[in-house]
Image: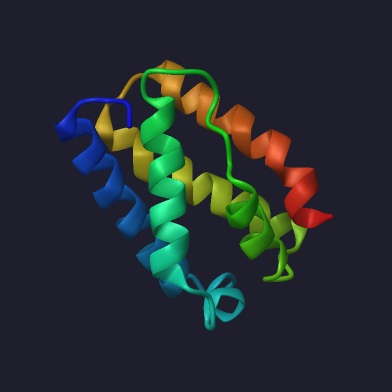
Length: 114
C-alpha cells in the first residue's frame, strides 16, 4: 500500500463519504440499492491509495465489473466521477492525484458502460 498512513485513512473516509453521497443521490441511489458498497468501497480505496505515490490508479477488474452490472448510463457514470473527484478535492492530496484519478475514470468509462 502506498501513501502515508494519514493519507490512507483520509482516502478511506472520503470513499465512504462518496458512497454515502451516491446513496443519497436521486439519480444514482436506485442503481446502487442492491450493490455491495462495502466491497466497492474497499476496492476503490485500495486503488486510490495505491495511486498516491504511483502511476495512474488501476481500477481493478472486479470494481469495473461490479459497476458494469449496475447498468449505469453515461450520465450516471459522469455523475459518479464528479462526486468522486469533489469528495477527494478537500483532502488536498495534490492536483496530480486528481488528474490521475480523472484519467483513470476516463479510461474505465468505456469498460464500465460497455
